[in-house]
Length: 239
Picture 1 (cartoon, helix red, strand yellow):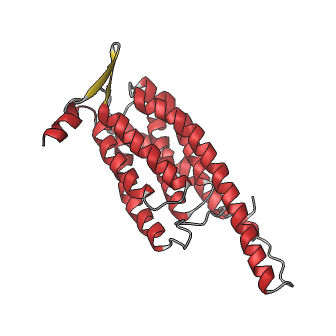
Picture 2 (cartoon, helix red, strand yellow):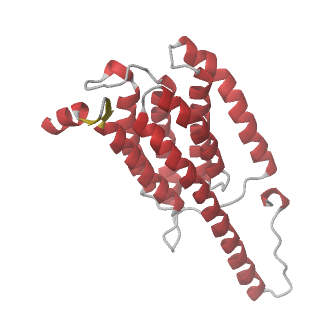
Picture 3 (tube, one colour):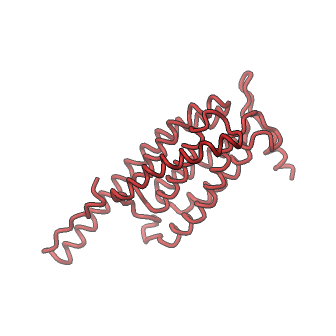
């Protein structure tokens, strides 16, 4: 109980600015989860859920004690709940598909149909959620909050499915999220978004390389069994 009281009240002070310890810890858990996701480790999901729980308490404004932020970020808070729900599904999906080398998923390029779905999902989701978040009193510009929520949902689904492109969705989220969170006074999270942007871009190239290595391995194995077979990737998975 004493630890929880400390956790909810603890702050770090930098000049005239204050940062909640839970905001920093939540983002560190998120970073650890992203690192686990890059390495395709199952533990990335429960670690991410722990960070989501912490950040939910941060973005609910004055609802929780020890708060230093006056702005309620409803989209940010709501996406923590969404993360938890989708992460449970992703956790199960990766755990049941874990292979012999310890990797939980084999990266795949999304088909063109799936890519069109991702673009439409981002645009339509942002358009639908913007008036909803505005009516609930979310921080302006509300479309940014809606964009972040929609992109986070899409990226989490993409990670669970093993789409290489899910990393680029995170980059799009980070580009919009950084100025929004900074203007709202969530400096620790805004700073982490800058770092996340570079990290997720690196993750894209790591998964891209892994996908090429896996495709080459499968081709060698197939041709070893039948030299007459020339393995060609399906057009839907072409870059």
